[in-house]
Length: 431
Image (tube, rainbow, N blue to C red; front, side):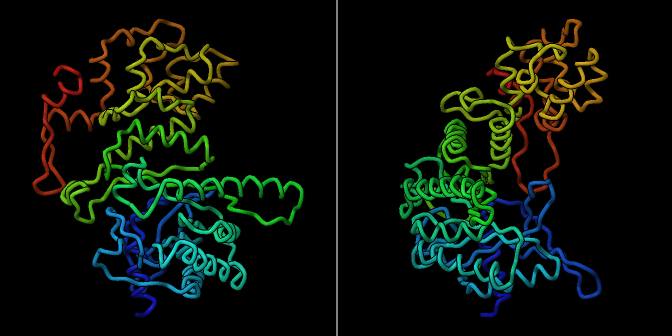
């Protein structure tokens, strides 16, 4: 099998890892133009200064010794198999870079023979890139749970960011769907990476040329919808991972029914993309807005699919509002729907010199369409006296309201249509 055939197999096998964003574009120049957007392995992430960076995203191998029920690469699944050598990965990365297709590498792998051996092969690929080709681009490497601690440390010395996929939100689901993995085997390398990053930072303070271990931190990924955990359980686990293991990001992956099993949703079930989206919004509130998981949801609860988590929280805590934008603290402003981190900072800075009105807030980037129900600018705001049902109707976006109250043309054949007024009444608590 030649390298390009391997590339097609192993880039397709890597598409379920969502720790960076795939372009979804397949457009080649055909030899008479400049550049290419071929979908094989090209995805994107963002650098610390906000630049969008293209990455070559591949698996080293999809030959797996594990039999995780949800995974398309499980050993009992009949799919084409391939394995790159470390030298092939290094040469592919350099050749893609020289053609200006990519600026970095995202490398993961199925468990080839055993976790430690797989990690050693990945490390060798990164060593060739860093030491022989002098490649200084961004590299994200997936740590393999169960690998030897020394092997993981050597991998971290060559990678910019490392990640360990927690996969499923509870130990019960992990035992049921991925019996070859254990919670301890996943959390142990997370702790090792956390400690390695901390120790590396200390050493760099003392010695300028000390080795750098995973300087861009670590992340993880959870599958949403493959098992029965609620959003409350997922969000509490997310908060715990941030606090205990100092993760940079927790990524959520809506389960794509790619394999058949009585333990999984039907292959005709659509991925819960809206649920994934709500979890990302809640994750943002945890990281930047000062919310706690227990504030956003009650035990066993899922997010409202029609209202974002911040609006949903505001409707459940109307006693907190209206907030006076000329006197409220920065933390209080962050809890107002329609006011983000940037606009809250602008409000705090601007009100030192003058009183703010609605026109000034609009210029600062406040989304008054939502915020007007929860704020006042000196004069009394009568919008907040609306009933909760009226506020829900007002906060629903035009697109959502149309989907609730009328039939909408579908992009897909035989797609169930919205339930109309009955679905709206259900949202408003009238059933």
